[in-house]
Amino acid sequence: MSLMLPMRKTETGFTLIEVMIALAIFAVAVASLSASMHNNVRNAGYLKDKTIASWIANNKMVELQAAGTYPPVSDRTDKLEYAGTQWVVNTKVQKTQSKMAVRLVEINVGVERDGKPNYFASLTGLVSETP
Image 1 (tube, one colour):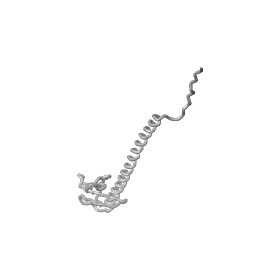
Image 2 (cartoon, rainbow, N blue to C red):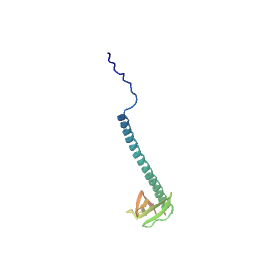
Image 3 (cartoon, rainbow, N blue to C red):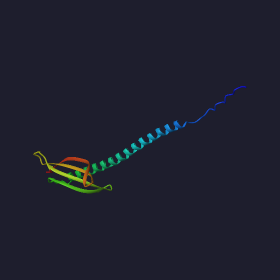
């Protein structure tokens, strides 16, 4: 009597462990990609606000310089609607230590959150008295 061993079939495909490891690697990759995309979206919004605030500060400085008048010492806060957002513009005009007729102007622009301004841009410049 001859003993015949059954022939093993060559199996193709992945085992359950291999599939589970591949899914775990894929899940980690998707989670890190999702966190990265969330950070990119948040940073894009912040950069948009910062850019618009810089434009508003530059516009305010040009307005002061183009007015042709010597600005009085003051600390003024205005609200402005721009690009669908309510902006807070704080303009502080101070005396300088110079003997010349020059004023130091500091402009801060931001958005009011919880009753306090959150400034995105600050611009400092000088305005002189025109003869």
